[in-house]
Image (tube, rainbow, N blue to C red; front, side, top):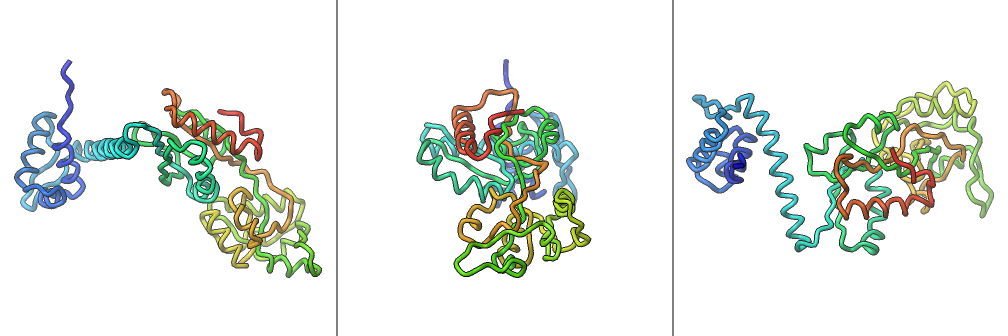
Length: 317
């Protein structure tokens, strides 16, 4: 049966013209003449039987059908280009993975471990983009996602299956200098954590996406903290870590995201009593298709890496 596939040249001309809403600027971008772009788009409209642009005295404007088709074509061309680059880069060997990831987990936990992946599986290349919310895999070029959410949020992500990686338990951390203001240490001794009540008198750093975190922590510790909601708010854990390192206050952060700061002594645990987090980190992938060999290997490698840290990560959803 004959397939209704437009030429890639026509699609490239349409995508550029749709993005600029200008044949002239599309022609400049593609190093073509304006008449060549116009002919390609006219041929595409003839094939579709649908007007994609409305001609005006000042140029062209997308029709509603053109707006919808333009969004889809842009995604298709992006997937095609990325797949082409992957084949060219890997010389036909394969093994490239496109991952969407929450930024702090990617930069602070995954990337420091990617050299180990490269040593053990040199044929796998990982491409990372930032995504913080669920999306439809069919609309993207992603093979999988590293996602932070609650079990309920993961279960409601349609058409996916998820592998639990790590729980997001949080601990109060701060700079050594700030901790010494309430717990003076002896010469040659390590910094001594304090009781939860002592933290109520220190400046607190808040996370804007979890505004009640400190209130929940103090309530779990049985501490009355009238100022639990006070303090500057930051969106990302990486922002909280930087502010805490600079001595601006105490922050509630999962230790797995500040391994470097804890190892170097830039941050210390102010109180060793953790608050179990509602969220966890997951590897999410489409449910209706078998993972590629590269993705299957990557998922197994992740389980090996996190298994010693969080044995419950072996379960899935």
